Length: 144
View 1 (cartoon, one colour):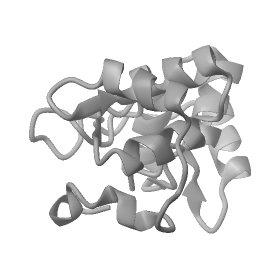
View 2: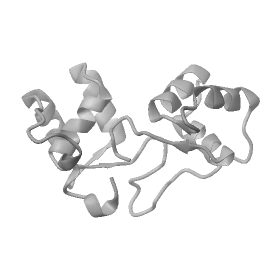
View 3: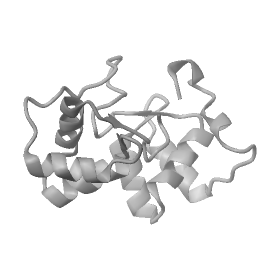
């Protein structure tokens, strides 16, 4: 959602979308100044054994902002993005990215999977995408 939608994230979901009490409490505990970092959301998902998407819905329902994207795309103290294009992209990384594209975009989940498989930083996958002019979307948390 766009900046102007801040505080209305719940509107992305049907009215009354449920959130478990355990998830609610974990999100509220992780929140700092109305924000939850992507890494914290990932940890919540692992700890509660729920999908990261479910954590994202919970964050939305609580009207909390997601910050510090692990791919460097948003949430960094007013900067639109932290990631910069890579100077070059190794052939195996480019092939993995291109193979995972859906409608000319790389899903956040696919970027994480590629990083894990190639044993590189998630930010490096996104930097390669920036170099290749490939958009990373959708976010697993539903942030954009």
